[in-house]
Amino acid sequence: MNLKTLTMVALATSVVIAAVAQEKETLKVALPKPCFTGTPKDIKTENLEEARNGKPRDPIQVPTGTKVISKGCKVTSSDSEPIIGELGFVTDGDKDHDATTYVELGPNTQWVQIDLGKEKQVDAACVWHFHGEARVYRDVVCQISNDPDFIDGVQTVFNNDHDNSSKLGKGKDKEYIETNEGRPFAIGSVKGRYVRFTSRGNTSNEMNHYTEIEIYGKDL
Ligand SMILES: [Ca+2]
Ligand SMILES: [Ca+2]
Image (cartoon, rainbow, N blue to C red; front, side):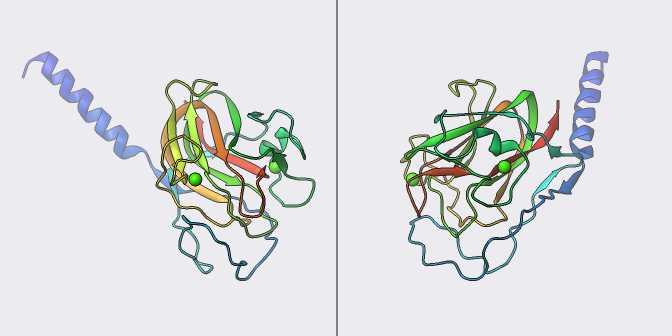
Protein backbone atom coordinates (compact mmCIF):
# COMPACT_ATOMS: atom_id res chain seq x y z
CA MET A 1 0.00 0.00 0.00
CA ASN A 2 1.62 3.27 -1.07
CA LEU A 3 1.31 6.57 0.77
CA LYS A 4 -1.51 7.86 -1.46
CA THR A 5 -3.62 4.74 -0.92
CA LEU A 6 -2.90 4.84 2.81
CA THR A 7 -4.05 8.47 2.96
CA MET A 8 -7.23 7.63 1.08
CA VAL A 9 -8.00 4.74 3.42
CA ALA A 10 -7.37 6.98 6.43
CA LEU A 11 -9.68 9.67 5.02
CA ALA A 12 -12.41 7.17 4.21
CA THR A 13 -12.14 5.72 7.73
CA SER A 14 -12.41 9.15 9.34
CA VAL A 15 -15.52 9.93 7.26
CA VAL A 16 -17.15 6.69 8.48
CA ILE A 17 -16.19 7.48 12.08
CA ALA A 18 -17.62 11.01 11.76
CA ALA A 19 -20.89 9.61 10.38
CA VAL A 20 -21.18 7.09 13.21
CA ALA A 21 -20.22 9.70 15.80
CA GLN A 22 -23.14 12.02 14.90
CA GLU A 23 -25.20 11.34 18.00
CA LYS A 24 -28.96 11.69 17.87
CA GLU A 25 -31.61 12.75 20.33
CA THR A 26 -35.39 13.02 20.22
CA LEU A 27 -36.68 16.40 19.06
CA LYS A 28 -38.55 18.18 21.83
CA VAL A 29 -41.19 20.66 20.66
CA ALA A 30 -42.63 23.04 23.26
CA LEU A 31 -46.40 22.96 22.67
CA PRO A 32 -48.96 25.74 23.14
CA LYS A 33 -52.20 25.21 25.05
CA PRO A 34 -54.81 23.02 23.31
CA CYS A 35 -57.95 24.87 22.15
CA PHE A 36 -60.22 21.87 21.72
CA THR A 37 -60.36 18.21 22.65
CA GLY A 38 -62.38 15.21 21.58
CA THR A 39 -63.37 14.02 18.17
CA PRO A 40 -63.18 16.70 15.50
CA LYS A 41 -66.16 17.47 13.32
CA ASP A 42 -66.52 15.46 10.15
CA ILE A 43 -63.85 16.77 7.81
CA LYS A 44 -64.13 15.75 4.19
CA THR A 45 -60.84 15.77 2.35
CA GLU A 46 -59.21 13.22 0.07
CA ASN A 47 -55.72 12.80 1.43
CA LEU A 48 -56.17 12.82 5.22
CA GLU A 49 -53.87 10.73 7.43
CA GLU A 50 -55.41 7.94 9.53
CA ALA A 51 -56.92 9.06 12.82
CA ARG A 52 -54.36 8.70 15.63
CA ASN A 53 -57.03 8.75 18.39
CA GLY A 54 -54.75 10.54 20.81
CA LYS A 55 -51.69 8.44 19.99
CA PRO A 56 -48.61 10.64 19.57
CA ARG A 57 -46.70 10.78 16.29
CA ASP A 58 -43.48 8.78 16.03
CA PRO A 59 -40.63 10.66 17.74
CA ILE A 60 -38.29 12.61 15.45
CA GLN A 61 -34.57 11.96 15.80
CA VAL A 62 -32.25 14.91 15.26
CA PRO A 63 -28.50 15.41 15.81
CA THR A 64 -27.68 16.12 19.45
CA GLY A 65 -27.59 19.87 20.08
CA THR A 66 -30.26 20.75 17.50
CA LYS A 67 -31.99 24.00 18.48
CA VAL A 68 -34.70 26.39 17.27
CA ILE A 69 -32.90 28.53 14.66
CA SER A 70 -35.88 30.52 13.33
CA LYS A 71 -37.04 32.63 16.30
CA GLY A 72 -37.16 36.32 15.36
CA CYS A 73 -36.00 35.65 11.79
CA LYS A 74 -37.31 37.85 8.99
CA VAL A 75 -40.45 36.59 7.23
CA THR A 76 -41.58 37.49 3.72
CA SER A 77 -44.64 36.24 1.84
CA SER A 78 -46.41 35.94 -1.49
CA ASP A 79 -49.01 38.17 0.25
CA SER A 80 -46.99 41.14 1.51
CA GLU A 81 -50.06 42.82 3.04
CA PRO A 82 -51.73 40.30 5.33
CA ILE A 83 -55.45 40.70 5.96
CA ILE A 84 -55.08 40.00 9.70
CA GLY A 85 -51.93 40.18 11.80
CA GLU A 86 -48.32 40.61 10.74
CA LEU A 87 -45.77 38.37 9.02
CA GLY A 88 -43.55 38.71 12.10
CA PHE A 89 -46.07 36.59 14.04
CA VAL A 90 -44.73 33.53 12.19
CA THR A 91 -41.41 33.54 14.08
CA ASP A 92 -42.18 35.52 17.27
CA GLY A 93 -42.27 32.41 19.46
CA ASP A 94 -45.96 32.80 20.39
CA LYS A 95 -47.78 29.60 19.40
CA ASP A 96 -50.92 29.99 21.49
CA HIS A 97 -54.08 30.42 19.48
CA ASP A 98 -56.23 33.50 19.89
CA ALA A 99 -57.53 36.27 17.65
CA THR A 100 -54.31 38.29 17.97
CA THR A 101 -51.67 35.64 17.36
CA TYR A 102 -52.13 34.49 13.77
CA VAL A 103 -51.48 36.09 10.42
CA GLU A 104 -54.05 35.67 7.64
CA LEU A 105 -52.94 35.62 4.01
CA GLY A 106 -55.18 35.76 0.97
CA PRO A 107 -56.81 32.84 -0.85
CA ASN A 108 -55.34 30.32 -3.30
CA THR A 109 -51.73 29.16 -3.08
CA GLN A 110 -49.71 31.45 -0.80
CA TRP A 111 -46.35 31.11 0.93
CA VAL A 112 -44.35 32.48 3.82
CA GLN A 113 -40.57 32.41 3.74
CA ILE A 114 -38.17 32.48 6.68
CA ASP A 115 -34.68 33.91 6.23
CA LEU A 116 -32.33 32.11 8.63
CA GLY A 117 -29.74 34.87 8.06
CA LYS A 118 -27.15 32.56 6.52
CA GLU A 119 -26.90 29.00 5.28
CA LYS A 120 -27.58 26.59 8.15
CA GLN A 121 -28.08 22.89 8.71
CA VAL A 122 -31.81 22.23 8.93
CA ASP A 123 -32.90 19.00 10.63
CA ALA A 124 -36.61 19.39 11.41
CA ALA A 125 -39.50 21.87 11.37
CA CYS A 126 -42.90 22.31 12.99
CA VAL A 127 -45.75 24.43 11.61
CA TRP A 128 -48.87 25.68 13.39
CA HIS A 129 -51.37 27.16 10.94
CA PHE A 130 -54.56 27.95 12.92
CA HIS A 131 -55.35 25.58 15.75
CA GLY A 132 -58.46 27.24 17.20
CA GLU A 133 -60.61 24.50 15.67
CA ALA A 134 -60.11 21.22 13.83
CA ARG A 135 -59.39 21.98 10.19
CA VAL A 136 -57.10 20.79 7.44
CA TYR A 137 -54.87 23.08 5.36
CA ARG A 138 -54.41 22.01 1.77
CA ASP A 139 -51.19 21.71 -0.21
CA VAL A 140 -48.84 22.07 2.73
CA VAL A 141 -45.37 22.14 1.19
CA CYS A 142 -42.01 22.98 2.80
CA GLN A 143 -38.99 23.78 0.66
CA ILE A 144 -35.43 24.85 1.45
CA SER A 145 -33.01 26.79 -0.76
CA ASN A 146 -30.13 29.25 -0.74
CA ASP A 147 -31.95 31.13 -3.51
CA PRO A 148 -34.47 33.63 -2.05
CA ASP A 149 -36.51 33.32 -5.26
CA PHE A 150 -36.67 29.51 -4.98
CA ILE A 151 -35.57 28.92 -8.56
CA ASP A 152 -32.17 27.25 -8.02
CA GLY A 153 -31.23 24.41 -5.68
CA VAL A 154 -34.69 23.91 -4.20
CA GLN A 155 -35.21 20.87 -1.97
CA THR A 156 -38.76 19.86 -1.09
CA VAL A 157 -38.81 18.33 2.39
CA PHE A 158 -42.58 18.03 3.01
CA ASN A 159 -45.42 17.95 0.50
CA ASN A 160 -49.01 16.79 0.97
CA ASP A 161 -50.30 18.25 -2.31
CA HIS A 162 -51.26 14.82 -3.66
CA ASP A 163 -52.88 16.18 -6.87
CA ASN A 164 -50.33 18.95 -7.62
CA SER A 165 -52.94 21.72 -7.41
CA SER A 166 -50.25 24.15 -6.20
CA LYS A 167 -47.93 23.13 -9.08
CA LEU A 168 -44.88 22.35 -6.97
CA GLY A 169 -45.03 18.65 -7.79
CA LYS A 170 -47.09 15.80 -6.36
CA GLY A 171 -46.36 15.09 -2.71
CA LYS A 172 -46.49 11.82 -0.79
CA ASP A 173 -47.20 13.23 2.67
CA LYS A 174 -50.70 13.10 4.13
CA GLU A 175 -53.00 15.92 5.10
CA TYR A 176 -53.56 16.29 8.84
CA ILE A 177 -55.91 18.02 11.26
CA GLU A 178 -54.55 21.15 12.93
CA THR A 179 -54.11 20.90 16.70
CA ASN A 180 -51.86 22.53 19.29
CA GLU A 181 -49.28 19.86 18.36
CA GLY A 182 -48.69 21.54 15.00
CA ARG A 183 -47.10 19.34 12.35
CA PRO A 184 -43.53 18.43 13.21
CA PHE A 185 -41.46 16.61 10.60
CA ALA A 186 -37.88 15.45 10.14
CA ILE A 187 -35.80 17.03 7.40
CA GLY A 188 -32.48 15.19 7.67
CA SER A 189 -29.67 17.73 7.63
CA VAL A 190 -30.50 19.79 4.55
CA LYS A 191 -28.36 22.91 4.13
CA GLY A 192 -29.96 26.22 3.20
CA ARG A 193 -30.69 29.80 4.21
CA TYR A 194 -34.37 30.15 3.25
CA VAL A 195 -37.30 27.95 4.31
CA ARG A 196 -40.59 28.39 2.48
CA PHE A 197 -44.00 27.04 3.54
CA THR A 198 -46.85 26.90 1.06
CA SER A 199 -50.58 26.25 1.57
CA ARG A 200 -53.78 26.63 -0.41
CA GLY A 201 -56.68 27.42 1.87
CA ASN A 202 -58.26 25.04 4.34
CA THR A 203 -61.40 23.03 4.99
CA SER A 204 -63.11 25.91 6.86
CA ASN A 205 -62.38 28.77 4.43
CA GLU A 206 -60.19 29.66 1.49
CA MET A 207 -57.66 31.71 3.45
CA ASN A 208 -54.14 30.78 4.62
CA HIS A 209 -53.02 31.24 8.22
CA TYR A 210 -49.91 30.87 10.36
CA THR A 211 -49.54 31.06 14.11
CA GLU A 212 -45.91 29.94 14.25
CA ILE A 213 -43.21 28.04 12.39
CA GLU A 214 -40.18 26.62 14.14
CA ILE A 215 -37.10 25.46 12.25
CA TYR A 216 -34.69 23.21 14.14
CA GLY A 217 -31.05 22.87 13.19
CA LYS A 218 -27.60 24.33 13.80
CA ASP A 219 -24.94 26.66 12.44
CA LEU A 220 -22.57 25.20 9.86
CA1 LIG B 1 -46.35 33.33 16.51
CA1 LIG C 1 -53.84 19.56 -3.65
